[in-house]
Image 1 (tube, rainbow, N blue to C red):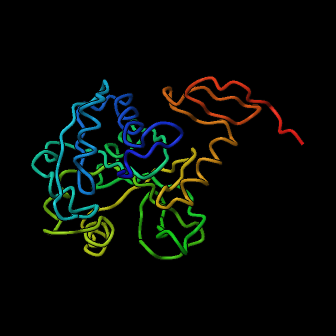
Image 2: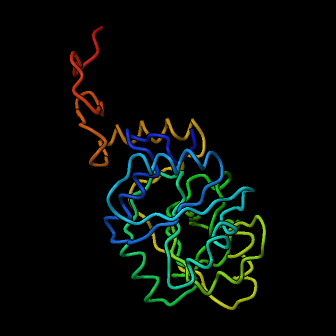
Length: 241
């Protein structure tokens, strides 16, 4: 099963992201396909959902977080666009992020959160409302959530082949001093879902705090912390000794 279709809190990750983009008024979404891409496309075709029109961009060879954008450059070049990583549990405020980006007129605006594991996740350093370094320790390390807004003027800056956003686009941008990278703090729940352990921890945290849950996630029973697609007979509010 490709990771974007893995059910998180009873809803495939990709469908949850598409529903949030639809609620934000995004009219069209590009989906890049590599590992088991045909399975993703078939799922979205067999179980269509209301909202943005979908366009698929195939990657026979993996292109990385920046290379995927270069692969879709002709489609993206008409205006500012969101980038959303599928393997994260997050409910971004897309309108607020886009408004900050357009107000600043910067090349990129990243949605970040506090980085509690800077030894594991690349720390971002900020000065005021600008990102000034990647991979550098600071008194308040930040973490890129996998959500950002980019200006199409960045697309020609991406070299061909497999490329990453940090090493091949944002860091060279900072080194050259030609443009600035802004940031917006995400102060809602966020979890990276990169490993099975991360996935289990994020699920437990969501059930413990009682949400948020997507509308199609089912019914949540607070006493038992059970999120179910259907009523389960015999569920009790406490464990028997």
